[in-house]
View 1 (cartoon, rainbow, N blue to C red):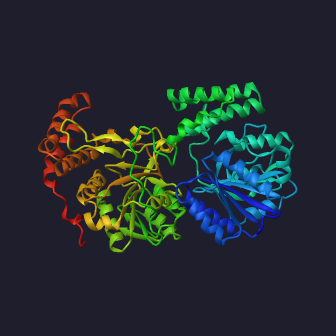
View 2 (tube, rainbow, N blue to C red):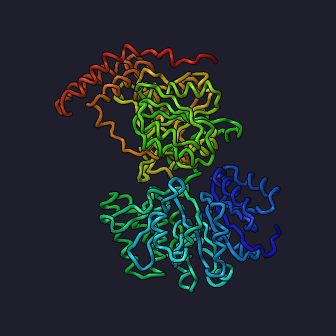
View 3 (tube, helix red, strand yellow):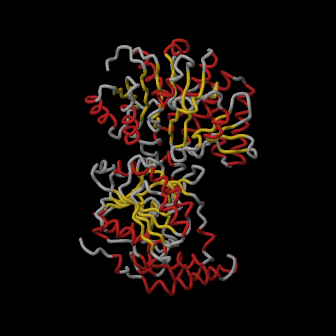
Length: 630
């Protein structure tokens, strides 16, 4: 395809998401009605430029430009839309690298060519395609659409007029660019698409969503957070960079297009949200700074966050070792899941694994329950390469991970990815782990609201007897959110909730110790790996969502408390570097018993006493966990 007057040019903006970009470009290349693909690379550092050069040399549709610095989504779309205009494209099809149009999407949009100036598809949550990825408020009403069924109910003749989710598969006509120009690059991120939409409407552009055209986008569960008893929503982001740009740019947009009263309502909404919904003095002060910058027209303040943004080292934190490079493409990956009587959660997890941008090669499910609902879920997922182990009894998470990892290792898989049934990986999580290429890796966990809840220890101290608890710093203590992390963070323990290990490591250290039953088997395994010379890293972009909040502190007086204490004591006895550390279980137990009248009675104390008595019986590694052969 030459640069001469292409009909439809896809404009793709990318930054350090090579796996997602590869998926998207592959889909775009398969579309016969798409004339050219213009990729704007925001100075990526993950090999994107090299890959684009190799593709462009063999695929005539693909062209790319690498910007000298990261100009954000706004700068990328400004450059891309101008590029499409300069080569004479009649239509620009705008999208980020993490979206994916269905194979029929473009044809369905082009059926409305000539009727609209700025129109696009229904943007669906990739993990839950019956839901809209971004809630839509119908213009001039209080009605908010959240599902595809809602959108179908609102359509007239296949469209919902005067509303669209911009820059997610939206088509822009050349004539509209003639009238209103291109995107505001100074916004950096957030709000540039809305500003362009509002500018288009004011210029008389015909805007619509085509209901039967579908564009998939990873679910963003933190957007559209309900507030004021469900009367309205707020676009909360755990990233300070994103929030600052959102508050600043929204202020600019509202003042320019709707006036002071609308802007003041947004400011009040922000104050309410961070006072009552997600109380945060830090966010209130940050919002005030951003709003002030917006009123002054200052578009430089976001730059201070860029040193801590994805792809750059976090300020004040010791940089992690560089990643060793992507895993070889021919490596085989097996997932190991341990489940017990949580069929609904297992179903969600399996659906998330089916949505991975890099498909898994096998899924070993260790079913500790054997109940009928679990069996039905497993039978329903015929699209997945499942290997099911119906144990017949509850052998705990530790026993389940022992059996599952051992089975995957003996089947010859190169990398083994472990997880419980109460988590859900983002679609790109596996791709991110493989792009890192390390031998011992962990996903980074967020809760349902997008808050960082990664409790992996950056420091797990088994040398200092004066430290009552060895976990002295967690990832969530050091970083305010996932966006503020460097690409990888060195950790000294991890949970089996997205933990990946290479078979080379398994050959050296063996399998998880089944005698733990629950708790600390994952900690034990990481310590063994480190002592064998394999460092562990948390990979920022390998996102794992938790379905439940952490409530382990509340379990100390329950039956679980016995295993928590016993197994913590075992870790001290096995891996303490001196006698005083090995004696810490005695000190801890004495303190728990002494404080029991103030901590709700003797149940916790009894758990600690039983744990102390029993820990000596399992202080040596269970021989079943040792490797059968090197």
